[in-house]
Image (cartoon, rainbow, N blue to C red; front, side, top):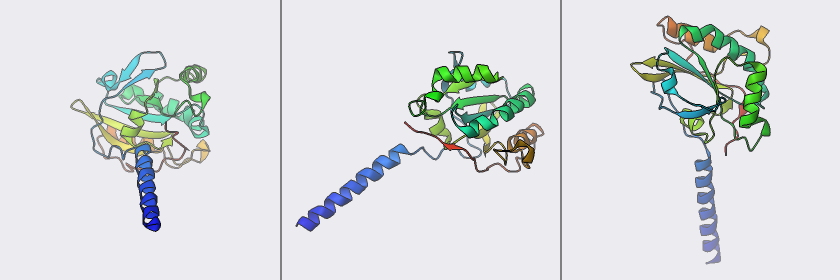
Length: 206
């Protein structure tokens, strides 16, 4: 009887922990060709920002990032360059702080404002306070990029993954994935490498 009870307790504990672990994990997220559901975030200027802000654009480059992550910092100048190159062609950058700010004080909303001012971001930098947008996209890394193409009012996922193939040395970059993806979409060509592996810090979930 004691062994039977012990097995029941062990099984129950396992199921409980498994359930908790599953709840703590982000959902699978959007797949290629999926239409992205609208979102509402708070930009560093205090104003709300959503897909409705980009209805007059051809698409959108969504980057999940953070202040503290060294990989995110390494890609800042490259993201600024991407926005300067493609925003005028209809594909602006939207940076989204997806980390739990309780895990790193550097990722607080106030520090987001400071960082954006220091680096002079030409694009919005919004906080995903509930982390609902990161979960909807299935993001796991910082930075992780999603390229959306607008089609008849819907924003369709066309690329997800890394910015390029070398987070440490810009001089050694062989493949500029975002540049390639957006350039292909602007030319009405399919994206050559629509899924790549993002390299960066893991998102700290609440």
